[in-house]
Amino acid sequence: MTEATPKPQPPGALQGLRVVEMGQLIAGPFATKTLGDFGAEVIKIEPPGGGDPLRGWRLLQDGTSVWWQVQSRNKRSIALDLRSPEGQDIARRLVAEADVLVENFRPGTLEGWGLGPQALHALNPGLVMLRISGYGQTGPYRDRPGFGVIGEAMGGLRQLTGEPGRVPVRCGVSIGDTLAALHGTIGVLLALYHHKVHGGAGQVIDVALHEAVFNVMENLVPEYSAFGAVREAAGSALPGIAPSNAYRCTDGFALVAGNGDSIFKRLMACIGRDDLGRSPDLAHNSGRVARVAEIDAAIEAWTLQRTVAEVLEALGRAQVPAGKVYDARDIVEDPHYRARDMILRQTTLDGHELEVPGIVPKLSATPGSLRTPAPYLGGDTDAVLREMGLVDADIARLRALGVVA
Image (cartoon, rainbow, N blue to C red):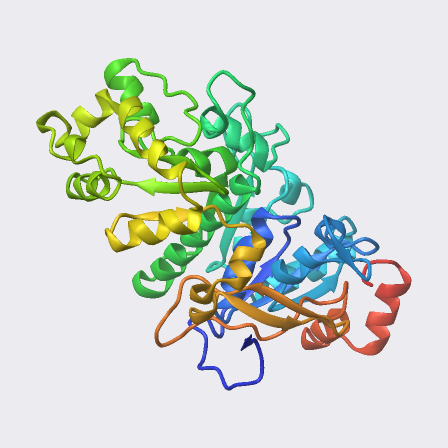
């Protein structure tokens, strides 16, 4: 078992970077989790009372989401009412000393609090400001509420998920939010590089959920532009690439990607269909696409006589890419995940031992690390305020007013 603590860790790649997070739920906090995993100091601002709603999402352990424990590791929590003038003043003071601000409110929210880019850059010209929203900070839809699921639909992903002719389905995770977070993280690192290397001023990174999804949709628009083709859902197959599908076995499904020319020949030899492997019109992808139904039927006739394990063992010997559909149990029991430190053990502040996802990407000299568990709501309020120069009497007054907790 890989432990998340006590062995000495080299300095993180982002050590010394100070990030203020005004996000909640998924998109903004996933971006700051990524920055925090690599050494950034992340101060998370949460509303007094309930805090980030993610604390109560999905399965709870002692009243707190285990998802929260992962999403908020390596962060400090300050409970601060951003709707109050006193809270906004504290936020300005925090941001004035920060390198990065991350927020995922609806456009215009920060401006309404006097915390928009113009005001904050006047205090801190080098500030990098990541703003994640449903539709972006501009455009005719900017004021619409938008969640990841809507971004997935507008970005073109939902149209392709599911079986042909059936209701489009979601992929099972909040992929629109995490794609936006990853694009936002890239934007932050680009802006920091520009500021440090080229002496450029701080800037705003504007990430829309649907645009992040659209950016990974490969050939949707070029195919429509060139041919008027509108790609539709294709179930488990990869349209226009053959063979690449999920095939039934006696005890489940095996995914087989035999679409390389030489791989296809090895696959056909493995399943006893050299006649197809040696067919001149199947030597290249275009020919295989024209006969994909026949090829898929041949592969499945073979897999249906075998277990998933037997299929994978035979295809492994033949050097044909193949795999099973993993669930959570498969992941935590897989030795490859363990060998690459992708399952770590984390202790929560309540003393629970959790197995949690490891850190991606893997840096050879400055790897990421799990330094601190997810914080209690407002667990770092007093410490952060004292670092700002407030004394106990100031903090007590603000707490009495409900500005902090």
